[in-house]
Structure formats: C-alpha cells, structure tokens
Image 1 (cartoon, rainbow, N blue to C red):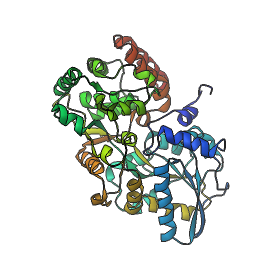
Image 2: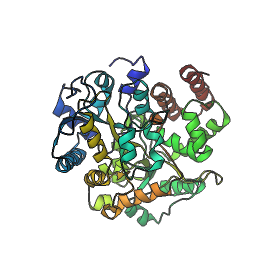
Image 3: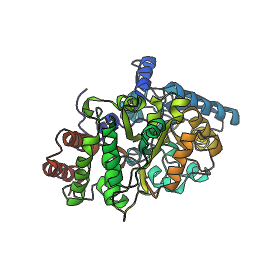
Length: 441
C-alpha cells in the first residue's frame, strides 16, 4: 500500500486501538467473509427525509463472532420495538472498513455506520461528510454529560451516539499475585519496587508490544497524564504545546526508567502476543485497554483477571485521569431514511441496547448511565468503578490528536525511543519541528 499523502488518507488508513470486540482473529475472519467486497453502501445517494417505516441501512464494522452477535441482538431488538422498520446490515471487517472510510463516506454510505468518538469523528463532520444528530442525542436519556464534547463538533453539534467504552489500566492475574504476595502500588516508586521484585521472582514485570505502532502510545499518554496533568495532555495533543520543552522530556525520562521492566523486543510483538505472556503467567502486569480480556477464556481465566489504574507520579496531580476510548455510531450526510436512521441511533444509545451489546463482549461496558450494573461480570463492575472514579477521561493519542501527526510523527518517534531511549532531546526536537509543520507554529 502506498504511503498516505493527505490527512484524509491518514484518517482512513491509520491503525488504531481495536474497537472493543475486534481482535486480530476478527480481522482475518472478516477478511475471509467479505473478501474483496470492501465497503459498499446500501443506501442510494438520496437525501434526508424518509418515513417512519421502511428500510434503514447500517454499516457495521463488528465482524468478530461475539460483537457481531451483540450487534445482531441490537438490530433484532430495534426491529421488535419498531416493527415498521427493517435494518439492512452491511458487515465489513474493522480494518477494511477503516481503510475505506473516506471513499465510503464520499460514495453512497449506509444511513447509519459504526465509528469512534473524538477527533476522527469531528474531522469528517468538519468536511461535511456526516450528519448532525443533535436532536436525537439530546432526546436520548442516560448519555453522560462528560462524553458530550467527545461526541460533538467544535461548534457544539452532536455527531456520534456513544455506545461502549473501555478503560486502559494495569492488568494482572490474581492467582499470580497471590502466589507471590504482590500488592497494588499507589505511587510510581512502589510500582518500580514491585517491578524489581517481579524480576527477582523470574517474571517479566510488564508485558509490552508495539508492532503495529499504536500500542505504546497508551504508555506515553498515561505517563503524561500522571506527570503533567490532563489539561497539559489535551493541549499537547491539540498542537498547542511545544514538544521540546522540559515537561515532555520529563515524561520520556520517566518512561526510560521503566523500560528495563518492560518485555523486550516489543517492536516485533503484537498486543495479542504480549497478552498471552500475561495469560501464561510469564509476565506480571500489562498496561492496555480491557479488550485484552479477549485473549483470556471466559469463565475461570477471565475471573482470574483484575486491574488497577496506573499509579500516581506527582501527588499534586494524582491518579484520577484515565484513558477510555469510546465507540459509537454516526449518521451519514444524506441518509435515505433519516427518520428511521435517527430512530435506530436513539435505540443504539439506550441502556437496553448497550446492555445487550456488552453482555456478548464483557471487555467493555455501556456508556448509558441507566445501564443495569447488576448484570455486569465482576470485571465489568471493576471497569464501572474505574470510570466512576475518573476525574478526567482522555480518548487515546490517535483519537485526541491529528491522525497524520499521530501516525507519521508520534508512532515512529515512540518506536525510535523504544529502540534508543538515550537520545530523547534529539527525538523531541524532531517531533517539535514536525508539530510546527503540521499544526502551524
């Protein structure tokens, strides 16, 4: 594949953390199932209006068995509640969907399609390529106020109906920790001491991977949130801060001190392979989104998983900020059946629809505040505790910043740092030079 030459192409092609429920297996399975079909919108070029009945086309990127089952349950639930509508679902593997999103939106997209909250949704809205759902968003009960900005354009129009999210946390096996008598660290010094003890016990303290160039972004994000606070992190992601300043160098110095406890040769390893190291009891911890649970068998293996938020680095900043990427659904610019599409979006934003979704995939939780937590697994209840305790919620580096900056600057810069952590100053000078070029001085 040729190198992307525009921001639009970067948006379409840049890999991101997997949507909850989509694994490497999902991509392969999806690719096999859809072959070279790619994205073909079911709707015509139509425009607005529609009726309170008829067909609503839906572009679904959840191709793996569990999330596909969940979204099918959503479709069935909607059609039962609205018998005058029929959903025509166009399922495409996640990567294929993402790589073709630009052409998809400029062609004849489905009335409703799956996407993410944050910059990537906002970008397409600013290009006039998606629809305004402010009316249905405002009428949907239970959507947290804290998610409104991530689902809105800069001028305050809502464009994403959020459905599920998952926190990034330090995950571990309870049985391994019990065997060695480990305790949850509250500070970065305690975290380092715990890592040293794990090494003495023959474990790799932290499973680690960055083969696809996005996984390690999470570690940079959390260290920056802990060392410099949420607002600085947001400003840095939006190009408002100088990357060569001492505050950013401090983050990489902090990371450099932790690298000896990371799993070696990370650039040749996928997150699934790193997760297997934890699953096999070879690693003591793994900082990743809770989608990592997909690598553990349901039942005893998943019940053995637990996690904690990344420990405090600066007591004046604390450990309240976390990352929790939010997945949801959008409206195409000219839906063939606008009324039906908005009715479907409203349903997808409801607690009932989201509970059906996360029941099939326990690595995520519903965003709707009216979702019934008594139906969650123990792991989901822990996720909910983390989300309720969060003071600030970031999306992820590739969702909070320009995708061309994330993909062509930060991805390679972090991989360069992992290979050679002794040249932080030059690396950050290069990042700053490219920040000015991409964002403007």
